[in-house]
Length: 66
Image (cartoon, rainbow, N blue to C red; front, side, top):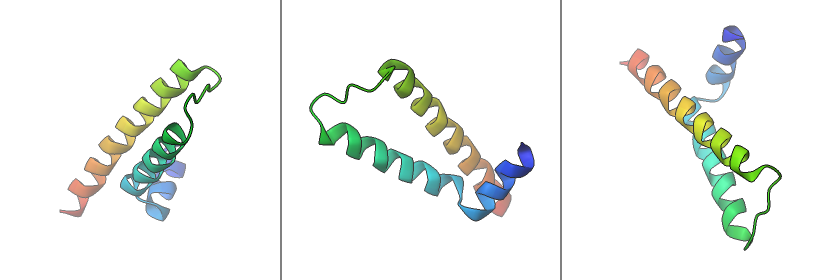
């Protein structure tokens, strides 16, 4: 699993993935008055943890570059 994650981050940096996901999330949430997602609370929590994970990975990648 780690090798696939490394491959993904070599193809697309974690900061870019995070920004794209944030753009998608906020575009969707702002485009409708009531998003009414299935398991909305779980969806939002998963998104929060994914964004935090990508932030941590972005920090690690940037530290390696220095």
